[in-house]
Amino acid sequence: MTRSVLIVSPNAAVAAAIEQSFAADPDIRIAREATTLARMNGHAAEAASRFDMILFETRPEVASDVEAIRTMAANRTPGTRLVALADADITLSEVRLLTEAGADEVLPLAGDGSRSRASRDRHAEPAAAPDRHGRIIAVVQARGGIGSTTVAVNLADQLVQGAGLARKAARPKVALVDLDLQFGSVGTLLNLEEQDTLHQLALDGTVPDGHFLAQSMPVLDSGLAVLAAPAKFAPLESLRSDQVAAILDNLRAAHDYVVVDLPRAFVSWIEPVVERTDELMVVTDLSVASVRHCRRLIDFFTQDNPALPVELVVNHRRKPLMTSSLQREVAKALERPLKHWLPHDARAADAAGGRGEPLSRAAPRSSLGRAMTRLASSTRTSLSVAAPSTQN
Ligand SMILES: Nc1ncnc2c1ncn2[C@@H]1O[C@H](COP(=O)(O)OP(=O)(O)OP(=O)(O)O)[C@@H](O)[C@H]1O
Ligand SMILES: [Mg+2]
Image (cartoon, rainbow, N blue to C red; front, side, top):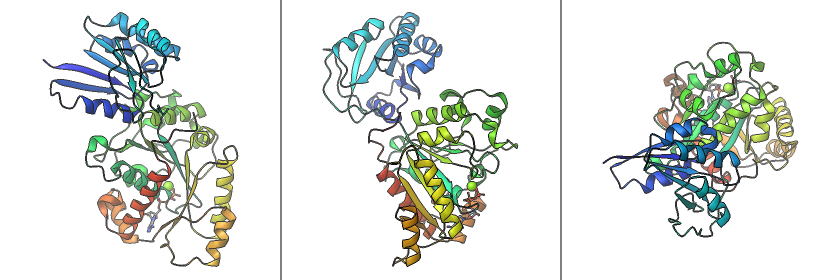
């Protein structure tokens, strides 16, 4: 008999690991909710009546989570098992709190996000319990047309392919967001149908939740989820900070990486982006005007977070064999090495643009395609997803 299992976790790695542990059983049908129990609201009660088992990641110290367990327990059909997944260092009194609220079982999460072992004896094994969420990479440009959207699109596309992982299910989850509301070209570069989502949010002023975003964002064959700029004209200031914050928070809860293409103009809702950025990627050339603008961008993003990693990407230039005095001066002015170089490769760029495909499909072996692979590989290393986040 088929049994249905719902996995509720904002953490894609945890959800994937649990799903994997059921993979050998063909009679189990798995559904996922990439959110927290509390954020499911009334939906949690409804889920309790529909599934045979609900596995949910929870934090006993979050009162709304415990309340959601109570609601599920009260609404479940007889036989539905509620299984709480908690940090491995959960205390016995916290376990009691969860079971009293209605959880049938409490399983500790291992450090790698997989189930360690059933804690039938209600005893948790000590293991690192990372508080993980996806990394936000903000891509900005030193001047118009320098190639920042090309970088954002291809970086996201390369990140979603994973580091040589064979199985698609084990690939990282990646979202690409075009916040260049007026001139955004992510949708065009990926040949997507026009999207209305950001325009709708701007019009009705609602704060989006994870469900809304998951439903509105098309997912490409590669697995990349895309939130494109509106097709209709939307003033840059038509989004509010709390809306942008909610977009980023929900996306990073459900993805390992969130790549954000930003407009050149400074906008009122930039603050939540700056606060949440885990890595700033600045696409530039070596002209005086561009370098000045880079400096302003870097200062702006690092003023409250001096330790923010900043990666400089020099576009339209092959990596030089020897460092020139100009390059040394630029690196000095920006207080960072000119680490990444993307060669000028009009043929590859045109092929990708013309077909509406990322370079990995349109021109994978081109010099530009290979440079993007290197950029993603370096980003993956510097932003090791497993590392605990310093922000909240
Ligand atoms: N390394 C490169 N070699 C050749 N062409 C490139 C390269 N990088 C980008 N391009 C091309 O330059 C043009 C502008 O690129 P893109 O849209 O990515 O720039 P942008 O900085 O996002 O521009 P905007 O200011 O409009 O947002 C595109 O036609 C793109 O294909
Ligand atoms: Mg652009």
